[in-house]
Length: 219
Image (cartoon, rainbow, N blue to C red; front, side, top):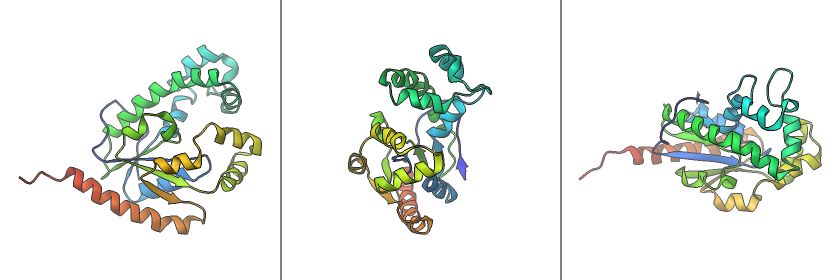
């Protein structure tokens, strides 16, 4: 798998896919399947985690803006505490985004510059919400599943209450909006065996498209 998380800035590749989906839809699972087939993955969540890990590049600014109470004893951002704040206070969310988004953008561009696969997949949970990502990728791929399945998965995975999960979902675009913005859709409602053929079909299509983009011009 060609997974690159952080490096120095440059332009996006000629052919790229923006992979998105609501919380609990299975974005990471699907992305890893594409990575196993040879696509380069640039995961903005992984970049954000690196920035907010102990000694992460964003931690000094976060501590200055929010105070030491928002750091764990190890020096990482306290995600549970920050999540509770930003999903109840839109101003706090904007303050956190002002710190993280420019740093994520720079690291994402840097990772794309180092891509070695035939095409690059940017894994961006809030791709539609950002207002800029749709224009930065060649195609948008949405991972989709029923909302009740999203809730159940996140409750089981993260130990959150249904209310907490639905608050996160309420801060994202609706399922209908996400599907309307997508060029391609992978449906993740029936297990990994049902995912593989969908991923392989799209991988073949993306390979063809990337070759077309990179093909020499015939006069």
